[in-house]
Every structure is written in C-alpha cells, then in structure tokens.
Length: 338
Image (cartoon, rainbow, N blue to C red; front, side):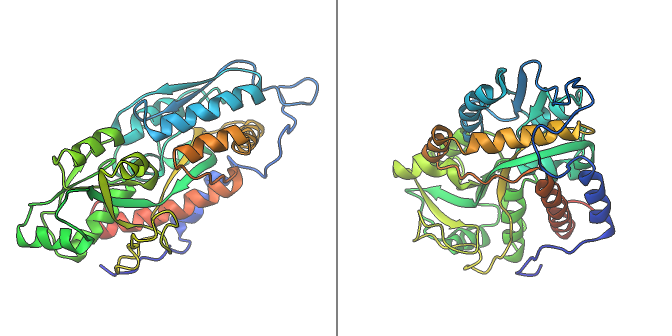
C-alpha cells in the first residue's frame, strides 16, 4: 500500500452518483415556492419533526443533536424530537429514517461511516443514491488514544509491540469498516501486522471505559469524544489526523507526520429518504445553518469540544460523491470489497 492516499478523481461511478445526488439537492434558498402551498410559500412543517440519532444516548452525537433541537423547534414552530436508535454501527437508525416516507418529517443524523461506508460493504437497506443529503453539521479529526498508564508512549511503540507478539494488541473503533477502522487497519497493513486485532464498539463512553480499564490497548475515534478523559488525565493521545497538529493538543503528532497520509475524518450529517421535495431539503438545510449560528448552540458544541462545520445541501451532495469514491477505493485496496 502506498503511504500517501490522495482523493481520487472523478470516475464513471462518481459521475453517476453526483447526477443522482444533485437531483436531490438544488441551489440553496429558503422559502422556495412549493406546489403544496396555496399561497406560494413552503407548506412545511405542519407537524413535529423526528431526527433519529443512530447512536447511544449520552454520546457526543446525541448531546449536540439535543442542543440543536431546542433552537430548531423555535425556528420551525414545531417540536423537533430526538430519538436514539442504536445498532449496526449507525446503520440501523439511519435505515429506519431513510427508508420511510420522503416528507421531511423523519430524518437521520449519522456519521459518514454509517452513511457512506457501511452501505458499500453491507446490505443495510439503503445506499447513498437512495437517500437525500441535507447538510453536514460537524466534522472532526480522528485521534488514536491509549490509557494514561499504558506502556506505549508512541504509535511506533504500539506497532512494535504487536510486531513482537502478533495479535497481542487489540484496538477499538466505532465499527467494522468505519473510517477509523479502515485507517488503523491500513497503518497495520503497512507494518505487516497481519493479526492487528480490531474490536468494534459503537458506544464511545463504553469504549473509553474499556480503554481506561485495560480491556483494550488503544481506541480510534472522533477527537471530541476524548475531551473529558483527557481533562481527567485518564488517557493519552498517540496521533491525530489532519494536515497540521490540533491547536488544543500541540504535542500530539499527526498521522501524516508519522508517514501515514490518509485524508479521513469523521463528519455528522443530516439525511433523509430519497426523492424529498427540493424546497423542503433547502428549508431544512437553512434551518440547521441558522441553528448553528445561535450563540447558545455554539456554546453547547464548544463544551463538547465538537467543531461546527456546516455544509449546505448542494455542496454536501458533491462532498458525498468525493467521499464515496475515496472510501470505495480505500476499501478495495484493503480487500474489504472487490
């Protein structure tokens, strides 16, 4: 495997996907006239909106979704209800939302692993082409961490330990074939670690508890989930993704510095069933934009160490195409798919 993985250029697959997604995501403008509205205004929403968070209650995704829901309810004039539906690395709850009626009243808030990657590997009931991308809410780097009392002070220490005792190291990620799993697997493959043990775990609090308790050796996940255990001195970061070191953790090297240049990140997005009314898509995208501009919501994200990274519907459709191709080729290189 090459040490540097660049974003792949457009291909026939990407072009076809872009056309399909673009049809769901027109240029942004709120209050676009809808055929359902007699007065020429958007006839939405007329009832409460449910956002399915496909992860455990109490995790970062759940907490920032609930912080957003209050402001969204205020802006929309209806209740925005957060519902947790766990399972399948985020695919179970996502499928429940995106295979329903395309009226905009039931949506999902998955990470890109569940939305873009999982559906390429498993039959989860949806593909990116069968859904409607609405917007990206937050994007964060990945981090690879060990317990504070771990004997492994560097990433190389961890790799050397597994090389000297094949299968002796177990690391955890949010799910099999998640972006974090693919990256750490690729790092192991570059170092000929054929028995680099992976233990998927969807719950970040549960994985961190296992890490601190010594049940696993390392954990790769969204950087923001490590905020509290870092502040408490319970864990230590070995590396983060990104072109530059994170300003909050200037002593932690990037994977790129260490010779592993994988342009992966974790982002959380709002998606719905395919064939949603484009006017509703743009309305929802703009509601999220306004919500993320609210000082109270921004404060809630800051306390979670969760970055705000809004991307509207049209640009998100383009991003999905690029990421589909990026991870499709990475998974082919890793032998996950043929």
